[in-house]
Length: 244
Ligand code: 2HA
Ligand code: ZN
Image 1 (cartoon, rainbow, N blue to C red):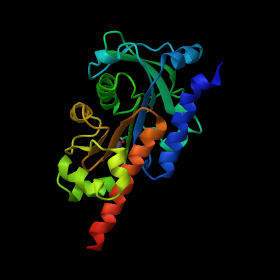
Image 2 (cartoon, rainbow, N blue to C red):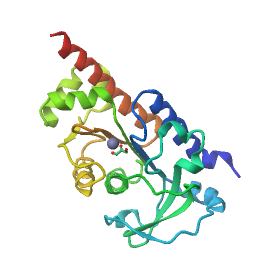
Image 3 (tube, rainbow, N blue to C red):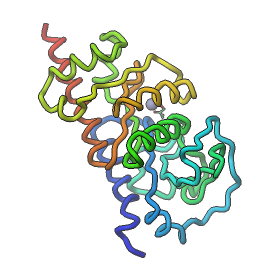
Image 4 (cartoon, helix red, strand yellow):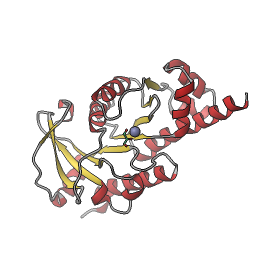
């Protein structure tokens, strides 16, 4: 097998571990998904070893019909992904009508895809459309400074963006379009997925008030870098506010 074609598993696992080391994934916090390229799907398909039934999705995503995703498992710890991808991750395929999915590989000890699957898929559908298929990654974590600020700043994206853009020049380069902000909504709910995916029409990073950050990108480097920049700017702002 051409290792380059399945490099996405290594890149995914590396990012999961590096994000864990950054402190963004206590216990089983956070989740990530990656939409496979056709070349990756065909290179990996000899390893598709599960014959699972189709399962109904809570949302309908016709824009992702037939697509395959590498996804973190519900309840799995980011720190363990690199040690055992086959236990902590799975590859799923979306049905041709966009209403169901089935597991093709992974979660070898049982389990199901991330509790935020609805959010991930709704957001993939939007980003795939608005970027002509370029963006492949959705990533969610619990960065402490972003969460802390969401208790102090109003739930207003113009204000949030302005405060973070002021913190360092890198911010205007990394997220020139600004940040989306959604109000506090139940974790894992369709409402959270729908509210976030509306923001993904215009933004690549969306703050989940009192919960965390949800970002999208074309590559693992870009996605990690965006998340890192938003959290770093937030940590500077927390310090600035604390020194006043
Ligand atoms: O524990 O982060 O939002 C997984 C989550 C849910
Ligand atoms: Zn979360």
